[in-house]
Length: 153
Length: 153
DNA sequence: GCCGGTTAATCAGCGCACTGAGTATTTCGG
DNA sequence: CCGAAATACTCAGTGCGCTGATTAACCGGC
Picture 1 (cartoon, each protein chain N blue to C red):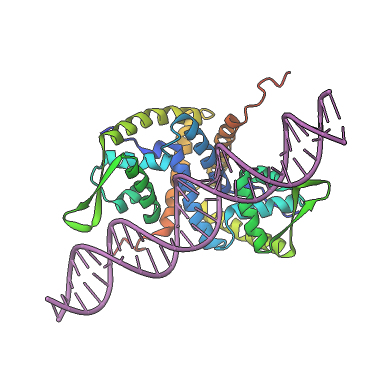
Picture 2: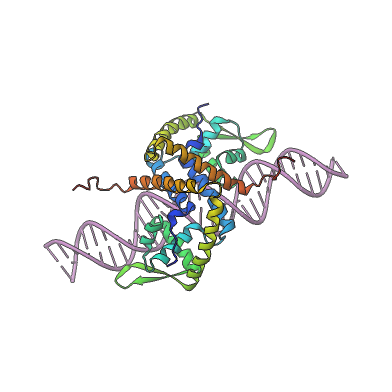
């Protein structure tokens, strides 16, 4: 009766999109290294020596999740953790040679996968796709950390 | 060095979008009933008496996940499971009165939440947003179940 | 030097999401 | 009617993602 059309619910679409992506990633990129794990490798290629919390911030993962992801990458020898001598609470993270090789290999495969994933869209539509997703995600993330509401001091 | 820009990776954006949505759902719709749970309630409002597997198909969840979601809704008394007398393998699912009430309440709140979630987009952009997400998700899901490739059989 | 507040990381607990293996039931072929 | 294939569901195992509580380390004030 009063049932709703879920295809007009952005959350439902976002979940389906992510599931579809996960499946494609698994078949076209890697069965061992997941997309969030790749995001962490990528962050450490861009900025070696980051601590755990900051990596989480860069890739959008909370403290608990980033800890698990990093411990898996650590177990597999793709990165190394060392205590920050300046601050004993922190671990400084750095990719190993194998981690760097993995990142290179996965980057190329991920690029190919993205082509397949976005194949149904024209070039203009891809631009719009990125723009719309980014704007909605950014705005919703902004609701979480409300800026002091008054930059005009 | 060779680090990639994750904002051009649809999978990364999809994950961020879903996380942002989850957060907003939690604060604006319900802390007890998740968005996938609502999708199940909605499917059973539209088609009472479905079996577990078919519900999963409708909302896009695999056999294991749908089993857990349904068992939680069952424990909370929002739906009832009865063995299909015609086929002893199936459970027929039906919302309880409380399940129907929950669906009504959540529908209204979800509609309000969607307004907030999509606030950064104009009406035209929302249409484009839905269209682009649907097309990409549909296409990627299609890669999983390859149609017999030749309807003209 | 010590106290209190803050911060980085861990741990416990919940929920979503998948695969692969196993069980019970139905259905189809002989 | 019986055995084999198919089907619905369950269970074990892995991984992402969150919150709340805890622990260890830092940092400011006194």
